Length: 340
Image (cartoon, rainbow, N blue to C red; front, side, top):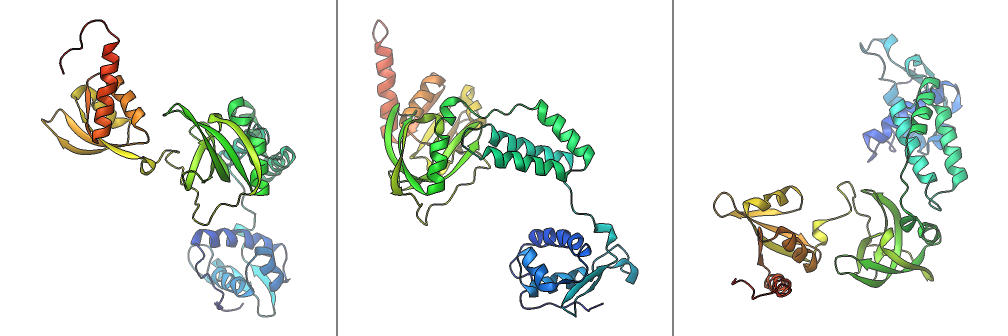
């Protein structure tokens, strides 16, 4: 047995999770290839020889609880060839559980159901490979559960542009969009360098660098009226970074303005539904908040919905817009508008 050694190419900045994953894969691989050349092992795992020696040194002090000589993994690599022993407890390769396999299989089937998003043959081969890697009982359970699950791949309006966008991503081509902005009830023309296709909160999105906004933007596919793939390089600029969609596609920091609103008690339900910051309370019942808003028209619609149970305090241009729309609505009724 060789004593633990740590070469200059040790763990470095590698995460503990990544190294643990490699070690758990490495043990059964080495046990099936006793005497393998250490350089071949390094190539197999995509690391340096020094890193393999560092990993073997760590395995040398790992094993069953107790720490006695018979409890620890035996590792020898002085000759340039690797021999492992006393590692039967982790000799079997890792296998996915039924829940993990089901999650992956459902995700793969969702890809297969979207036209143009993935190579159907590649997806089918991956599903077959994944099922073959499961233990028989888990594989049977995953197949049965998979047959019972229906994957909503999106409407035709969402998926009709997928093949063209996938080709644009593959070839690094810029696309020209005619995109509907529902908050303004208008269509805009935009050139976009595609970054990825992604799904969030039940909708498909194109994420890319928008040359109109000069920033990264998400575009819902069902709001794209027309799309053309341009014969122009579509490589996003260095400052284009994908956004974290863990909390949904909307980000308050994308809002174009901040609106201050006074809520009556009947409108406090808004605190549970919209991003906001409480800035004051008048009498313990009414509350004043600030809200991000992407478009003033959205605020005016919200105020009409609340029907006097909320009032915009600032900015002045939004206050004026709400007042004008309220007056126009009242003018549709017979008789003079009530005072105030």
